[in-house]
Each structure stands twice: as structure tokens, then as C-alpha cells.
Length: 119
Image (cartoon, rainbow, N blue to C red; front, side, top):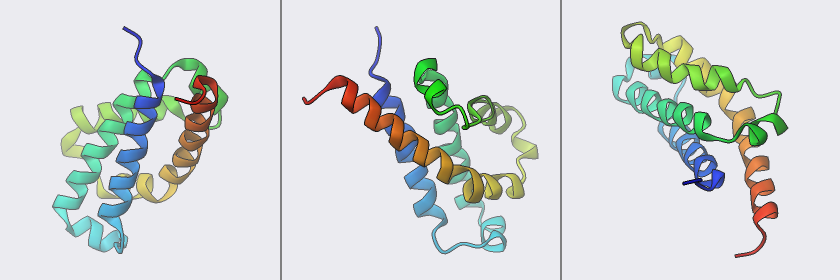
């Protein structure tokens, strides 16, 4: 069964929105001290990672500047190297990497909608 790739785009956009909401008003020091928010970020990054693996290659190829392999790989790091998941890596991912991904996903979402036509 082929699922609509828009589902995975939506999952990723929702996870990014969750991270943005959960870290709103935070600086690095507050983030570093807040175990719960770090764990929320980790979980949402796992969702982003897994959903990115399910996006068709053709959709990712259109947004070639996005490091898709690294996005897929961060889930493995979080799951398998959980004891080494440093707040610095999580914070930098949140503050530097998510906005370009969000923009790319919005473009992919628009292309999928245009391809599928009106519902």
C-alpha cells in the first residue's frame, strides 16, 4: 500500500511545530537545564527522522540542499546513543536546522497538493 507522501510531510511539519512551541522563550541554558523539554525535542526529532525515511526519493531530490541522510540518521543517534545525546547538539538542531527543513517541507507540501489537484 502506497501512502500519500503528504502524510509524512504533515507529520514532520507537526513535529517541527511541536519543537517550536516547546522551546519558545528558551535560550540554551534554560534548555540545557530542562530535561522534559529536551526529551520532548528528542521525541519530535525521532518523528522527523522516521517520517523523512518514508518520504519518496523524488520528493527529497527536489530539495537537494536539505541533508536528508543526516535527518534520517539523527533518529538512530537519539535511539542508540541516547546516553550521549548532548543538549548542544539538540539545541543547534533546533535553532539552525529546523527552519530550512520547515521551508523545504512547505514547498514539498505545495508541490504534492498541486500534483494531486483539488479534493
